[in-house]
Amino acid sequence: MQLQLLFPNHPNRQRAQLSMNLTTFNSFKNKNFRLFFSGQFISLLGTWMQKTAVSWLVYSITQSKFMLGVSVFATLFPTALFSLYGGIVADRYDRYKILVITQFVSLFQAILMTLAVIFFKENIVWWIISLSVMLGIINGFDVPARQSLVRELIIDKADLPNALALNSSMVNLSKLIGPAIAGFVLEQFGDAICFGSNAVSFIAVLISLFLMQLPQQKIKLKADKNLKKEFTEAFLFIKNTPTISSAIIFTGLMGLFVLPFSALTPVFAKDIFKGSASTLGVVDGVIGLGAFLGALFLASLKNGTNLSKILAKNSFLFGIGLLLFSQTNSYPLALVFLIFGSFGMMSVRTITNTIVQVNVHNEFRGRVISIYLMVLTAMVPIGSLLVGSVSHYIGVQTTVLIQAILAMIISVLYIIYLRKKE
Image (cartoon, rainbow, N blue to C red):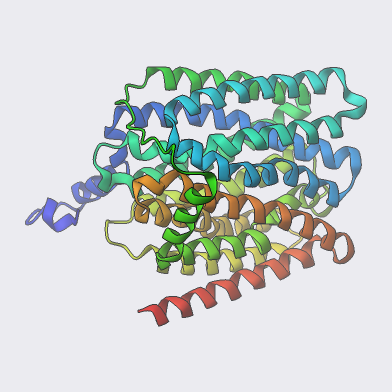
């Protein structure tokens, strides 16, 4: 809502600013969304602690950039493969019940990971990769159901873009805090505590889910259809909706060539900045800080904002930040450039997700979201293997420099496409 409509003749700018801030958090008026937000936030703190511990452990033991890529690939690629079927499951069955089941199974996986770190230290890298594959399969069902459920948590559907942006800010706030805690815990208490904390964090999300009061989801039985027909429908819908198809293509290109820069952060922390596990925690946390600020910016956008143009501009900003980061050996300067770049990076995930969610019909929601997630979660792990291999020969700084240039090129091409479409 425009401020002049709220305060048509009021000179007090401070009150107008207050209204804008309240609009930023509009979705919190929904009790179910508040529960979802708080439970997911605590759980994601544990998730980012585990991710930081995995990266540090794998690189410390193997000293291999390629194995860092493998550890990312092991989690994300199975998600890409199984998310297609996960999307159909999310459209056929109760999304809330699916989410409860996946959270219980994720808790079991986190317990196994903790036990492996304690009792199978000599082969821990392969245990991590194997259990990461298990987590990737779980996420293939969890993420389409979770993303689709957000719409059901919001009473006023006009607040959906705001809810998605706030959800993204929650993810990135946890990414700011989680790695920083992980770096401290790794140095002071050891890796088992990091993995164990992730297992404990699932209790919070399960409690929040059980406290929700959701109306019974209307399930349309599709006994006369098969997987091929259902996905043909979804692909045709995407093809006939250029706003969604262009956003998915953009996501795929950025996911393959640019987003995997984060797989190299342990190398920057250990080799470029000569740091420790705490250094990695700060680097990953700073990425989370920039992304969190970017998500808050997106949550503050008023209804009717052209998200596609914001996506293109912020992605170009992402490229500039990466370019500056790649060419400095100064640790403090690098952190500043990372905040700058990750502010823009947030748009790649959040705005593309919002564009898809706002424009998709509810009967296709689970399948279309799963296709979007498949593109993202397939391209990022493939890109991680690629940057891990390339950086072995040309170094991490040159590799990230190339990624930065590609980010700017992709953004410019997207701007040209948007102008032609107008």
